[in-house]
Image 1: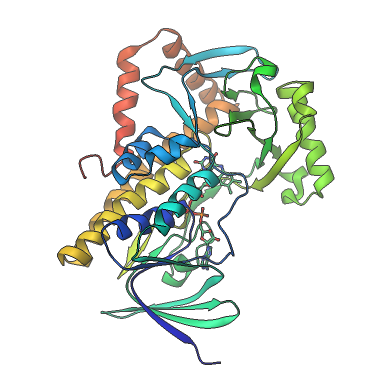
Image 2: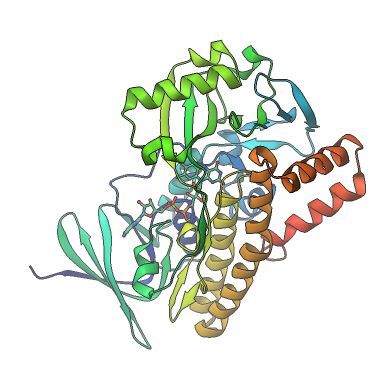
Length: 402
Ligand SMILES: Cc1cc2nc3c(=O)[nH]c(=O)nc-3n(C[C@H](O)[C@H](O)[C@H](O)COP(=O)(O)OP(=O)(O)OC[C@H]3O[C@@H](n4cnc5c(N)ncnc54)[C@H](O)[C@@H]3O)c2cc1C
């Protein structure tokens, strides 16, 4: 069957939050961009919830902030580290100046999609699955299957935002170096429940080697995310039938929050493995990787979505400079590569690893780190808190950019 062909300045593969945000930045600058998504709609199963303040700062610049806040629960109460059953280990007070913004990933995607549709130069094509990618010194050629038929696309530049199993990454021959956490399989469940019924703050880390969890409100309105894990060997890689999976989650809800939570209706569930992995290079020729296609981290502390959107924030602006100002793509993409690779390896990866061990670690070093972390919080060590705040700024590469 002869392939239909298309041309676009930028082909973005994958309409997750990273692909959507990159395309939106290009569309706002009037650049012609096409987003190719293998599914027939955006993903709506449970994924990230917390929207980091650095992401919100970028959202303010691109005009999506108000719509995101409109769908969020703006948490000024703060959160807790507690034991299963609710005994509080340490409270972290919130404030109106530094709220925690809860907005489930599907809601953020909906907002980005809505804004994208308002850009005349942005197109999105669903049911388009990338098969192969080749590039020469002046063009990239992508072959998709779109609605069962071949589609060939010629693009000046390509963004691989096609998630953890990225075909773009595989086509570039890049390994995803690192490791997979083999102690558990994560189970993310959304339940129709009000945390006030259990006397819990809207965000809680439950610290325990077995009955650990992250619990938080999903956004505006009712609904709670309960993210825990089942030991990997017993989990048979998550291949339980639905009833077994629900029974396991209800048991954990009962032990960790209480019997009323165990009776709450389950809205949706997803199982996943956690990794600490990264590609050696985010760029090859005229193709750049971003988000989960380039790096994976465990979700404790919410740095997966954060680091991915902050990749997109830089990459979108870099692509605008290349295509609008005619700046050299090889130099600018090399800068993007070294900047975002550095952010992941020097900050995101070690911080997320420490966050995870703090909640479910059992080694003496993990226990000592947790105690020292709690001690500093209890003591209200302001200098230390400010240093943490300064350190995390490195995650954003666009603070000084419009
Ligand atoms: C169950 C679960 C829970 C999570 N919880 C958290 C959390 O609490 N906090 C946190 O920060 N992060 C969490 N994460 C991670 C977070 O969801 C990811 O970091 C984020 O989705 C990355 O966005 P992305 O756009 O890079 O990739 P994705 O959101 O995976 O989007 C990739 C898109 O590409 C499409 N695609 C794939 N292959 C192709 C192809 N060949 N052709 C065309 N399109 C393709 C996919 O359909 C998908 O829509 C969780 C992940 C999972 C799976």
